[in-house]
Length: 273
Ligand SMILES: Cc1ncc(COP(=O)(O)O)c(C=O)c1O
Image 1 (tube, rainbow, N blue to C red):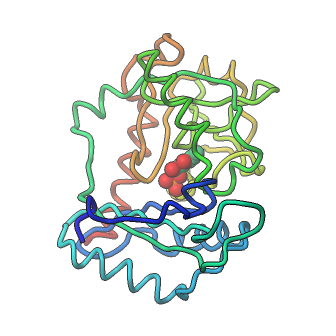
Image 2 (image 1 turned 135 degrees about the horizontal axis):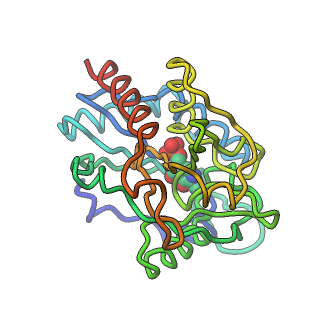
């Protein structure tokens, strides 16, 4: 059905509490990209919240593939949401089964000029809930941070914790390149989401013998980085060229960011072909 006609119950616990999980993936010519990685993360999120959907993993995949095929989009964005289910708002879990919805839209991408110009980012204290490693629907702190970033003329918010260590961005993972050409991204220590794009970038960098490390990234190190970039399924790899109002590097997409992005695009092309 058209997305604007889709309805869900007011009593859905996803609506009440953000009690649910989601995945966002993309598909090219009907084939879902990094499907195994997205399904693995979905299952991990579902297990963490003890949500057991009525559909098996295989049936869910079939629905996703059918929806993508039905859309007819050459490049599609698929969003899948599974909530705790429908039931009275009160203590305890709802009587109803988990509720699964999904939609597909055409994939949007940046123009080459927009990409080259990069985006501005703002660093903010990471005040989100205690389990950012679960891709849950508790997105309010992320949305609020993004709103603050927008109000400050930036497009993304980058969080740091009470030790001044960078964690991740409101809807993406963060990488910094030092003046010596070493790339650093915070580790999967339970305080960040295990981004699929982050994983794909690490894989590509290692295959290309690029020096990359998963380690603590201090806020001060981020501020003096030669290059910063963020990764996400929608964002792919985007250079951050301004941080807290200051220029990063030359104020344009840097060499390492570009190199990794080219490598990332090659992998995507190979998948599409
Ligand atoms: C907080 C957060 N970190 C990182 C990411 C990037 O994850 P992925 O690369 O799997 O899209 C997202 C994506 O929505 C996110 O919400």
